Structure formats: C-alpha cells, structure tokens
Image (cartoon, rainbow, N blue to C red; front, side, top):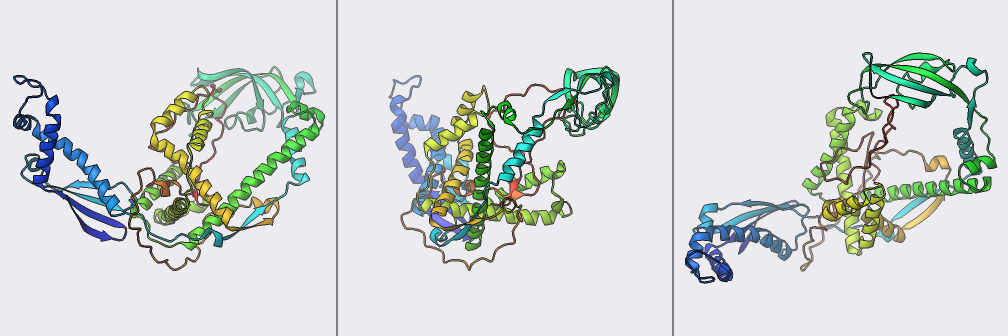
Length: 527
C-alpha cells in the first residue's frame, strides 16, 4: 500500500492510496484458501473445489468484498499513522477502473479528502476572570407572586342580578355551543357547560368579546373567523357561526391572600406557601445567574481564540441556523430588528453566529479532551430517563429509540458535555460574585455582542507524534458541544434527523378554543 499526500491547503487534506495489483491478487489467493474448505459446488467433494475454479466462478465477487473492507480499514489506518484528527467524515473517491481492478489487470487506487481539526493552544482557565451576578429574593417579589396567585385562584359564584346579570370582562360565562360552517355543524365544534373567561383570550378572536353583555338563558349567534394559522387545517381561515346558549354568568370573588389560599394550593399554611415561592425564585435566580456567568465566560473564550475553522463544519452549522431563519420568515416569527434586513445581511449575520458557535465548540471540546472531561454512562442513562418521562405511556419506546440511535444519544450527550466543561473552567477561573437587582439580573442584554478584539493568533502546536486519530464518537464532539446561539425570533427548524416518539396526543379541545400558545424555540446567539 502506497500513501501519497496530494494536497494540503488550510485545513483541507487529500491523500491517494494505491494497492498494487500483485498485492491484491495475493490477498485474493489468501482469501480463496481461507473459504475453500467451506465451498460446496455440484460435481466436487465438499472442501475439494480447486482454487482456480473458485477464482473463475467467484473471483470478482470476492475481490469486490475485499475492496469494500479495505477502503474503511486503510482510511482509518492512514489517519492513525499520520496523527490526523478529522473534522468531518472523509470523502472517498475511487480513481481506478473497477472492472480492470476486479479482473486483476490494474492497481486499486482511491483518494481520501477531508478537513482536519485545527491545532491551537486553548486559553488557561485559571487566567480567566468573570463576574457572576447574583440577586437576593426580596419580600416584595414574594408578595407580588402571592397577589397574583390570589388573583388567579379567585372563586367564582353566580353574579348578582340573577337572570338580569350581564357578563363583562373578568366574568366567567358557562355556555353550550354548536359551531357551524355554511350552516352545517362541524366535528369538534360543540361543547356543553364550557366555561369562558371573558378577557382571557383562550378562545379564537371575537368569540369572548361577543359574550360581553350576555345574560343567563340568553341565546346568541357568534360570528367569527378562524385564524389562518389555526391548528385544524380544515378550519384555518374559515368563517363560522356558533349557536350559543348562556347557562349562567359568574363573577370572581375578592382576591385574598390568606391561609385558605395556601390550602387550596396544597400547602399547610400561608408561611409554607411563602417559603415555597421564595425557594422557587431562588432557583430561578440561580439559573439566571448561571446563564449570565456562562455567557460572560463564552464571550471571553471567543475573544481569546483565533484559529482557522473547518469550512464544512461552519457550513453545516450555518445551514441549521438558516433553516430556522427561513422557518421564522415563513411563519412571521422574525424579530422586528431583523425584518428590515436583506437576505444577504441576514446571511452575513448568521454566518458570524455559526462561526462563533463552531469556534466555541472546538475550544470547549479541546479543553474537555485535554482535561479528561467526559460524560458517564450513568449521566446518559439519567438523561434518557428524563426524556422518557416526558412521554407518559411510551417510556419503553423512548428508551429503545435512544438505544438504537447513536445520533440521538450524541444529541443528549452534547449539552451534558458542554455543561461539564463549563463547570470545569469555572472551578479554575477567577469568578467574583456581584450583587445586582432582580431587574439587572434578568435584563435582556444585547444578543449579538460586538465582536471582541481578538488576540493575535497563537502559534500552532505541532501535532503529537503518536497521537491516535479520534474515534467517530469523538470527532463531532467539538461541534456537538457547541453552545446554542440565539437567532432572533426563530422557531426551532424542522429537523431531518431521527426523532424520539411523538408525545401522547392531548385530549381534543373544542374547535372554538385556541391551541395553547407554543413557545418560540430560538436558536441562541448567547453562546
């Protein structure tokens, strides 16, 4: 086997590997002798078929199988011997004529093209300085939450005035209704004893508003238009009428913070409710504090490193982000700040985000690799179990899904690995706590910070002479560990990747009721 480096430009490498025809024929002879005792052909005793006859009958097929084994085997051997850490799956191109090779008339040659991981010296975690903002939970914050709970949990009772009581905003109207399209009832458009809280916005536009002034026993016809993006496609954008019978009108009681409120919420007393709220806010503040210090750390790591990025890795990251941007554009979820930008401007901005994501991912992966940070099987199992409980009744299928899908496991592993590396860095870094107000802690910082001034490129380190090429599981780690970035107002793009089983279907809601609003899954810039 002869290996020749044909090109080396930036992080791109191309190697040519040639197997002489004589070597291939020797391998073929050895293979035939290996299988000969097992060959059974009519006219020959078992195991006594001449090698020449086997070659004549099956030579090309055996050679083809040998070559299929040789390509990945020699590719990995080449990478190992040359201490190459691939940044992507090598592209294989056979350059010899297949029939001539199979017939033993030509050498077998193929090219390996790939991008290699950049060599760089990561920043010393002990020399990094970051601030961790922290905020105390104020009594006023707990009191505000208590008042809101009291407001949300007010008891409703028949409104004064009896049959003459008129519904107004804030009241609950108990109704029966039947929805009709072109005068005909449609499936899912009817309900009995439906409780409509006027002003909550839980029903489609115009439905609640037309119940203002309704009295018990009154019948009304509500004329509405279903939203264009309504979850039931056959109703989206359609005009409909709802025949409504008002059964009662209920008014809310006074919002009172007392022991009874705590008991209605499952707590022993009011002090217990206050303690529960305070603990919840402390957890939320801690999570926000962690997010802020992590952002500061990643900003600093980004500023500390300048090195070439594998183009294919950046392209793949950009493609993922751009799919989300396009999805946001199509569904009118793009943030205001992006709506006035041209496609070229958006692409330039998001390619910068992709580059930052890849760069930070490579830095975190390298720091983790050098310091033996890894994700344990126990941690992965815990993550799988956490995913499984999100799908009641399908837990077993979820676990089996992850057991059979290495790519899905890698997606679970990535955020765990990232957090462990960040934890490792923060343990060594100079982290100082700064007390701030709650408003400052939750202040929405500029999501696309101006690029920090980067240091001059560090000297590239020579590759260790005996460093083994990374296993497939490690190669994408730099990219997988890459922190997510926020692309303004982007809904999560539809992925082509394998997905876990769908969640158990929810009980059907009356067609007049809106689907629960979905949260936007924005691709973060703040990594």
